[in-house]
Length: 243
Ligand code: ADP
Ligand code: MG
Picture 1 (cartoon, helix red, strand yellow):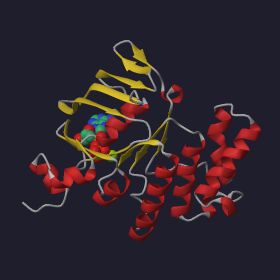
Picture 2 (tube, rainbow, N blue to C red):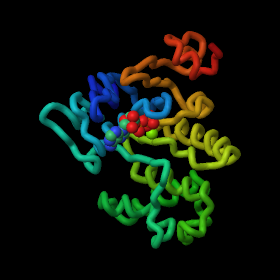
Picture 3 (cartoon, rainbow, N blue to C red):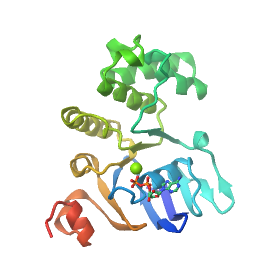
């Protein structure tokens, strides 16, 4: 099986800082990789480059065999087979939950019958069925975040990019959503890159964890292996070892 995502030698400098200094990795279809690293290690920068929201200085990206980035190629975000969930969901405040979920599907010119099917299926998956006619302001923070995830899943992206989607929730809700998300991602077997600085989240969700440190990949390995054989002191510290 050929990889669904191929990232080759991505570089990005802000001012004099090499935020990303030659990042390369591949993902298989259905895999979930958690991007871990301290604050400022370049996790969001890498995700935004993959999404096409930010331009890299150098590097190549292929998705589903399609070259989306190279020396002379730049496919814009809306034409990439991806969708993204941010920390701040930015729902349309004047639209009902149903309309919020439907919006991206309309943009993609998905026919109405298919739109209705997709809305029904993601609302069921994320327990939003009773809330479809409400406005975002009539939902709790946790429910709004469910809508953000539903909205992204409804477009059936080949690759789902999530940047700390649970970090605004309180601890109890975060723990609940963590296991719910783990369940959903496994069930749908959707290829996901999930940015977090929460080790517990990474362990619950990841097939492999990718640790960024000083612009490079410190380690890329399944959670258990990373825990048992951390390659660097930094990774060991992230895994909870005391030095
Ligand atoms: P993380 O998501 O891992 O916390 P970021 O990718 O947001 O890290 O940021 C990585 C580094 O790049 C930080 O030092 C940050 O200050 C810097 N940075 C991010 N975006 C910009 C920008 N638009 N302009 C200048 N510096 C930036
Ligand atoms: Mg970030």
